[in-house]
Image 1 (cartoon, rainbow, N blue to C red):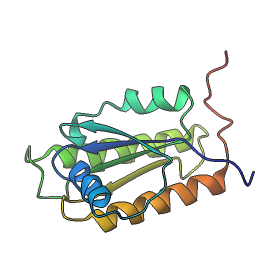
Image 2: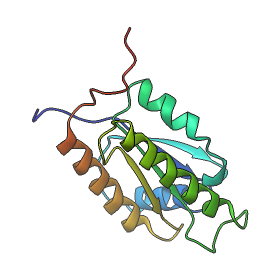
Image 3: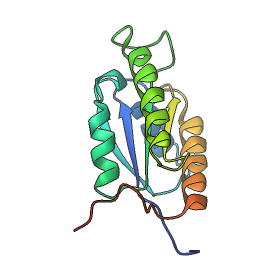
Image 4: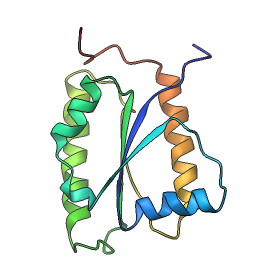
Length: 139
């Protein structure tokens, strides 16, 4: 299990979290390469079905990150995202997905170090869980 490297789908809002990831990169702040970034206009626009489909298609975890509360470019999008994904996380854990496979955070455009720290934390937590065995599509 020491050579296990998880695949983590990372969904970032364009205005804050993606800019924070960009700042981490341009500042040469190191973070794990396990994350696969998808940029969206707002974290509030992410349909929970996208997360379920990603898990079914083989990612080991999903991390959604948006603007801090009160700083959303679209006023309330991050509030909708927060409510939606905490409910989805609880539902998926209820039906058997291990705790720690869904993550949600706030990262602003000026928080490159915070982005790298959270990426490291999420990767370490998912590595401890190991490869997923539940909700994997059989081929």
